[in-house]
Image (cartoon, rainbow, N blue to C red; front, side):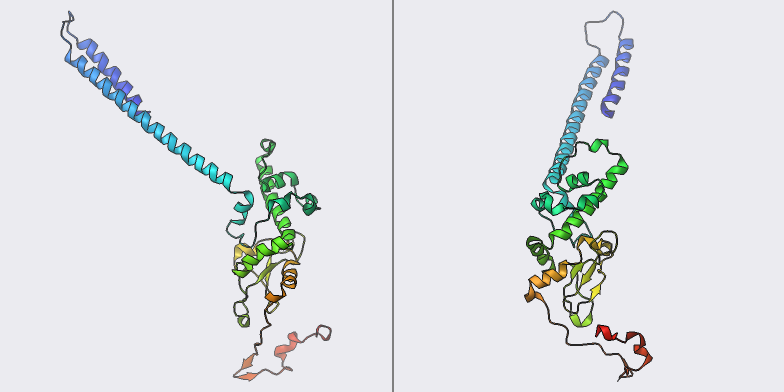
Length: 278
């Protein structure tokens, strides 16, 4: 404490001055300088008390802030935190009871490193052996937890509860809209090109034109496509046929000076349909 430290030095100096300046014989009257020393000591003690009170108040405020932070950490789960990250808007929150069912996690332990640690992190389970992990291992566990949640998410969104959670996002166009002009802003659905991780990033599928596009956001475009799988948008529409939009009635026709380009032109050379695909 700077105040108390400075007060201590000043106090010692005044006392020494008082002892050396006292007249010999020690008269019955009180030395004015000694009186000033006592007053100075009382004032400094009061200042010290004030400083201690201020320190106590600051400590109490810090404790309150830390308690608020810890309370917020306790209130928010790892799943809510992960889905709330910027760029993770495509993810819905998977019910914990679904994750706690081992049947739903069959085969994932062979795909995810540090599987048990990652699962405990996703479910907010205290990890007693966390202190034994190195900093590098801890980073691997955090990455593994995101991967594990993504693979669980791909399985969850093809269930009834998962489809309902994704419906809310689809209705609000959280996955984006089709860039095709004649689709008129049709909301899209996320889809992967592989069910195995680390192969392709996520794409978006348009239910109106059946086109496949990159997400508009670069953050979302870096998400692994396996976290949504190859099945979700198609199974979702099959289960909700009333939500299948009508195919666009308009089709773009290329023109040069207002004239249509003939099909025999070299312009269409690489766009000729394979007879097997007609």
